[in-house]
Amino acid sequence: MIYSLRRKLIRICGASVIAVFAMIFLFIYVLSTRQLNSAMDMITDRISQNGGVFPEVDEAHPLPPGREGFPHFITEETRFSVRFFAVYFDRSGKILFANTDFVSSVSQETAWEYAEAAVEKKRERGWLEGYRYKVYTTSLGQAVVFVDGNMNRSVSHMTLLSAGAVLIGSLMIILVLILVFSKRAVEPIAESYEKQKQFITDANHELKTPLTLILTNLDIVESELGKNEWLEDIRAEGERMNALVQQLVTLTRMDEDDNHVVDEPFSMSDMAIDVLSEFAALADEKGLCLSAKVQPHIEYHGDEAAIRRVVSILLDNAMKYCDGDGKIEFVLSGKRKTVITVENSCQDADSIELDKLFDRFYRSDKSRTFTGGFGIGLSIAKSIVHRHHGEIFAYKKNERCIGFKVTLK
Figure 1 (cartoon, one colour):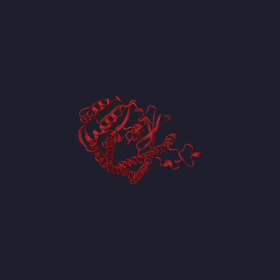
Figure 2 (figure 1 turned 180 degrees about the vertical axis):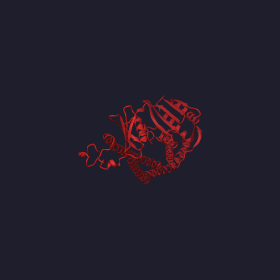
Figure 3 (figure 1 turned 90 degrees about the vertical axis):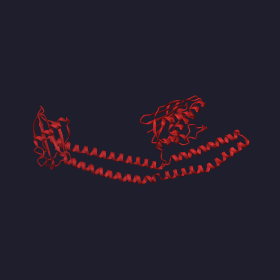
Figure 4 (figure 1 turned 180 degrees about the horizontal axis):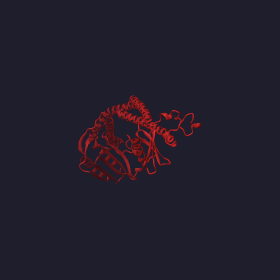
């Protein structure tokens, strides 16, 4: 159980760190992309507003006071480093001409192809093979200006790669630290758990011998004095304590991680019918209506004895807490998964704390009136089901009915 707890702690911490780093990288990616697009759009805006050429910035054409309308990165040297071209259409959509004077790697024909592709997208702005474009309207018709953004995109990609590498490296370091310190984190729990197991083991040894002696001497006394109500009370309490000790030992053994589950094929349908037949007589004796729907030919791989115990625990629990003259319904079905449900009528269903039913020694009867159980059975059932990689939970069908559902993969 401790190793399982440590693995769960590692998974939760690891998943949390990965999620945070993924969100950080996504934020960096979105912010970097938006900033790149915004910067390129500012350049396309300046060119489109200046008749398809980059505005001159020199002594004769200084930047406006306060640089109104000009991005901070546009200087006197920017027009010499920006590569761009523009294509113009008439009102009917035919290409008039292309201005490729400010780019050397794009021919007139290539510029026409780019412009037609950009117009077909029916978007004002976008990217086309490393060029940021803007579609705008002129007095002649539509026009498209393209600005070379390959270098800017490369710088942006390198920045993202650097950020990703730093985040991945940091993630690896944090995961290693989680692996190292998770062992220290569970050490107090492991120590407490080991003491608990040792206590139960010691208690079993210390109680087993006197209980055996009490029951053995009781047989001798009964043979000499005969049976009476006091001796029967002593026997009942001795046998009850003996059963409690055995259940505690069983539950402790189930918590051991090295206790492997037997994986053998068996007929779940035949097993369920066999267990139901054992409880049918008890149901008649208590005046309860036990109905069952068992799907035939359900095969399962697992520990038949353990699964049989789960079914017995659920039926026994239903018998103990079912209303007088009440109804118990058992259903076994199987398609992709094997599902077992046990429902019983219960007038106090609303007062039952479903999340505590599988806690050890919990009983819904606050007065602790003895019903033949110790509040351990459902804990044992839960341990068995989990060891078979299944799920078990309690639910309220309505105000007067409670049920348990087991799903086995």
